[in-house]
Structures are given as C-alpha cells and as structure tokens.
Image (cartoon, rainbow, N blue to C red):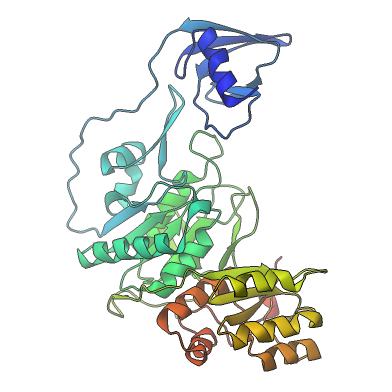
Length: 435
C-alpha cells in the first residue's frame, strides 16, 4: 500500500488528521487523535496520540477505523504576550535552521509545531526569561542532512548581522545529524565577539524522553556566558542532570539515538551547564567575550569531497573527482593516514592537476603521522597534506574554507596545517580516549 493508498483508506473511513478515532484490530481497540505523517514514512501504519500522551503506530492491515469526533487539524494559537526586556539581562537570539529542538508540543492534541516567534517559544519555555531577554528568528527550516556550503555561509551572515545589531549571544537551533559540520563551518567563517552556541535534540518534543528543553535552556546559559566562540551544547548524561559545551571544531556525533551522543574529540569540553548555569572546565582555554571584533570570512569552495579508504578501493573513485573539476579532496585514510600504494599514481595526478588533497584518519581518536610508514611518506612526497588530530568532518570543512581564502596550493597547505580556531592540538593525550 502506498502513501496515496493510505490517504484513500482514511478518506473512505471519513477521517482526517486531527480527528478523534478508534482503530480496532484482533488484539484490541485503540482510541486517539490521528496524527499527520510525512510522505516518506512507511506505508503500513498510522499514528495515534493516546490519552496518556504517548504516540502509537498501528498497522492498517485487517483493521477497522471509526470516526468518534470530527476535529480540525490541531494548531497552537497563542495570544500575543507582552515581553518586557530586562535592562539587567543580556539579549540572546535563538536562530532556527530546522530540527526539533525549537519545536513545541500541544499535549492536548499531539501537534508539534516550530516555534517561530518569541511568543511561541516563551509560552512553551518561560524559564528562558530567567536567564536572558529572548528573541527568535527563522533562518532555515530544513532537515540537517540537506545542509550545503552556501547555507553555512548564509547562516553565518545572518548571525553576523544580528551581532552587529547588538545581540549579546546567539543560539542556533539545528538538526543533530550534521550539526558538527555546521559548527566547524561557523567557527572558520566567523570571528565572533559574543557566544554562538549550536544545539539540537535527539528526541522530539512529543516524547516524554525529549531533551529539547534541557539542551535549549543550557544553550541560552552558554550564550549568556563569556565564551565568545562557536560551540555545541548538548546532553552529556543519560538522565537530565547536565549538558557539556564543546568547541565547534572538536566535537562529533557519536551515537545515532542516545541523548549524550556529542563528544569532544582529542580535547575536553570547555564547560558543563546545569539549569542554565555554567561551570568552566578550563578557565583559560577559550576566547573571552569582546576580546576580538566581529570578522566575517565567508568565501568557501563547494567543490570539495570526502573519500573513505577501504580494502579494494580503486582509482576510479579518485579519478571521478579529478575529472569533474573538484578543487579539494579530504581522504579518510586508515590508521596514521594511509591509502593503498596502488592509488599513489592517481593521487600524484590529482595534485599535478591542481587538486588539493588532505589526509585525515578513520580512527576517532589520535592524530595523523604519515612519517612512520613508507606509504605515508610517499603520500607526503606526493603533496598530500596531513590534518593532525582534526576530525575528518572538521578537516573537510576547513579544506572548503581554506580553498575559499586562497587558490594557491601552498597557501592552502599553510592554512590547513596552522591552528586557526582551536581545531588542531600540538599533541594528543591518551586521557582523551573514549571511556
């Protein structure tokens, strides 16, 4: 049964989204509000919001659907509320790009809606006003897997404009899947005099286990702090005890669904936050508020790709990018930064034709060292740039940014091997290994 056939199935039963219905199957009868589903969801279930507040998916095979009460599509409509700015508090902007963290739930109807105004958000989360004066702005409303290089630039320009207008901190609400790419991109594009904090949610706001509020609350606390860098603020425990604040170039999503999925790689978090209040882990290891002026370096090269080395990789994969005019290639090499030696001639060809090729590691922790084995030394001699202890995601973003700053391969190499915004450590300690 296709999505269209499910629509016809519900239409024949005279029910639509928002209606109170009953669904009877051999194992029992369920009563609840019919919820909307995206067109790319599976074609075998409908979803009801039960009286308990939980959602349940019900297979539509061998079931009987009856209308109990006809209702309009549930909506949240808030009356305009007067928000008086407290002159003793900082002004924090929450800029939405999509994702679930800035969505709000009507628990009576089960409807989830994006909070696109301060009225919406503060009606749902009035505790935010205890920390700062809050405003809300929508930049994008997209799934994070749909992010592109040009979107990173537009987000940076929009945030820069708000900083120029006088906001004291910015929270960027973002989907979690590519949030560490965006945090790295904003770190390189923007030199900020105020905090810029990215946050998201692993669990949507219609689930009892949602992490939306605690992440948002602590992110506003981080935006109210003196850490004037691009950071990521997310859960750091399986319960609701605290969040960690990670440098935007040293963070990575480590688990598909756990709420404590984000971890600092080859470094420690900058701080922890509980109830919006910050505790510094290293009081010296961050750029302080108003230490520098706002500076926007927005040029980025979009024709940059990542290739993962694997047993059996062929020249064709590398040649594809060379032949299509890609300017940069980040290779996720094995171990200390290796590729099969039979790929070497193709790498040499790419470098000779003007492609900048950099090397990261598939290992989560540790750093590139291409001088240990002959394969690595041959790649270095061919012109491949080692990326130190950067994560592959950060190295990819930095290569895109570096190529936007210069078309000269030597200058790009100098940028890639220079610590710009805390993405490179001089050495890596074993204490950063995953525990």
